[in-house]
Length: 338
Image (cartoon, rainbow, N blue to C red):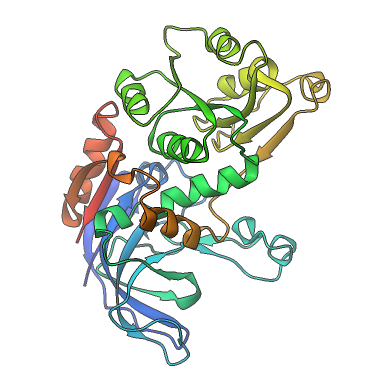
């Protein structure tokens, strides 16, 4: 079979691999579509601290089961499925309290182990979820990114009464925006690219802020009647944005959920957190959110088609990565089709 492999940073190629064997607790999947995530691009460019090389990337993928292991009972050949790429040890403290997405021994398909940019992949059955027939392969490949939204909604304890600021109108920011509006909360979103902000308007943002020309703090204080944002999702990874959110924009008793993962040191006075009793909340991957998101897709509660802007054949992956690098204003989500 053919696979798309990042041999080393900035070197991607098509390789021949044997079709993997299907273990007794696994299913063998014929991959149909796979999304390109920002983290895939970071691995390609050698900017992901967690990845090892060579690596078949891709953690957002869907396909059809063609073989099942002897111990697999709830799945069958022909099932259309999405794959949760999060794999945990089941024994460490995080796993014992039900938070396997931050397992001490965490492995993620496409990062620590080979992922979905290959024609066939064997996956543990416990990581596989059926998807409805009426959802196209291209749209279904977006289920995994939307599990990030489901996770951050839970981590931030979003309610319809919240006044939310989303920092970053890239794919994840826009996906979070859709989920926030689905719940009924007021949402502002900031970015420096007009095309992204225009997409956010189309998706129902109550306020869009061009951070290149506007004072985000002033805009948010006006938006919230001088209270500040009760819930902030920081998805840019820009430490200055995070510092501003915590020290100037968050309301008393507010929550700041951190998705970005810069390794730079953040400078925040303790009093900024203590005096307003802020909660600074980390979030990573998803914790069992696939069934919830598949239900959202099934019921048409979201608009994933508005996030998908481009498709490429999987064998044009290098071209797709280059296009994503050179057209940030035009691209939202790219999906590779098999």
